[in-house]
Image 1 (cartoon, rainbow over the protein chains, first blue to last red):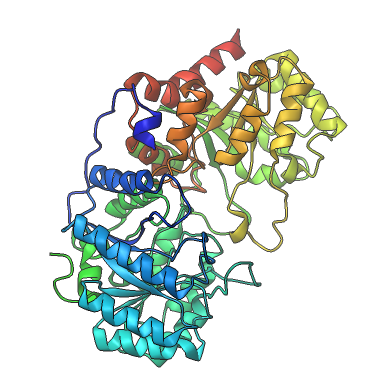
Image 2: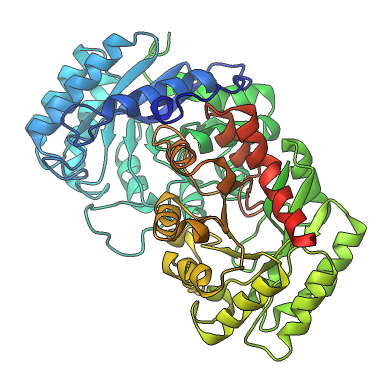
Length: 284
Length: 259
């Protein structure tokens, strides 16, 4: 969209790229059945911004039809099958740039396990759970068991400090994700988008002691003090950089993290922690 | 660069690092901002916010890079003197946030201030929000500014110039395309809450509205000072357009105020 709408303008200077390995652990791509006519432009925009920032790997998921033929957070099995396959195709088009997470709906256990196994066979490297069931629901256990067998981490959509129900999703907060993580201590869980809305302060209190849960820093929220508080709560070994729907705020957070962290700790957050928890060789 | 959206002083709802003037200046240095339009954050929540204005003017004398944007409460007696003092102090704008002040956005008091700003030539600044509504303190129930309020202000007085901070794409489009050309030409928007790629809201707005309507603003220290720079860095934007956003448009506003 940007290239079309700003045609005729002179491109500005490319900003200094982040000079280390960089993995965006929370990316999304769209497809022809996602109900957005400019889906190709959205995908191209993400890749183009990634080039400017210096992102080596977009670790992506695709939430079914994104509401077009089934709800974003309650995607139907056919929509998930199509979206996961499309994402694998996109990864094949961009080798060395895109890796995929398998998105499933826990209400359809057999389908979800089959998607995970097929995804693993075809190069996907993790499980994405959105908000079809609460994180501590027993329906998630067989999926986590499958993820464990495949060596997959689990990225879970989170509403920071959810204090009531929200329409369109059965959202979870950190308390519920930590209950699930305690039942599966051998799996790494990623608490999604600390900056994605909601109150992130209570999340940090919950996570201190559940050490198999890492935080992804993505989201449009750029509250002053959030990054410092996350570091104080869990340390650099449990932080993962990501962008989600706003790469601009992702770049801003990277620039702040460069200032807050030693070079070694910055490399943990930018890629090292992701390399540690995802299957060996995922980002080579 | 000129950052039109900066605060000094403590925030009542959570601990925020970097609220002292020296820390605010250091954050400006990190991203290359020379001058900031600064409001006294605690007084936004005081019953009489004008009690913070002498401190703010003194701050501006001690730190000339910080230009004062005092709060005017048009529901209090003798607010006209506060406005006159702001003009006398060469404030680049005055601010009134109806939600924090507890005033109806299109009530008689606010509209009197709108008219007074128009006649005195000083821009009126207001924030749509200070924080994401989903993360606010349970007692922080101040309503967000609505697009219809801004359209009403522009319609109410033909001279008033308005600066709106922390508005998103939908808000901006509703006001811009819901106003006459002359009205839309009297409102400026900071880029602190406008999404970049992949949704490309900022690129879209720059293409449909042009760069003259936008100002560099961060909301620091409540928000990261690095964000608007990152937004501009990810745009395909001419040096001329970037210069307008980073400094030129705010400079023009200030010069018109002085004239």
